Image (cartoon, rainbow, N blue to C red; front, side, top):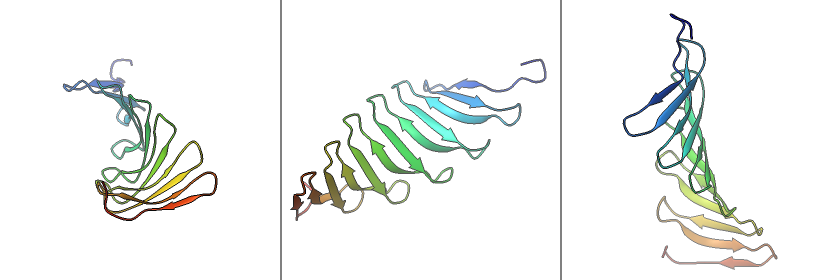
Length: 136
């Protein structure tokens, strides 16, 4: 911009992340971060309260997030193979609760984050499988 009207548009961090900004001088807001690994993180919100809403991963997967800045939680991940994984829980403790497959099957899970176990599978053809036991 003109002298005295410059605005921040991009910051290259020491770790290789590139952070992009939009907005008027003094009110620039973070809109995306590109990582050296090829992922892109997208943000919404006004300057100072931007929150993560979507993460496009290098492998083709896309994560969706909800919540205020600093409390964003993963709610859904669309994998490159077309599976859609749904999550519940607070940030850092999100647990997988359901996976929907492109073929129309739905897998249901119970358990805490990291130790979820399959409890039921509803197949696209109407069949239902029930499962017991611990993860593994």
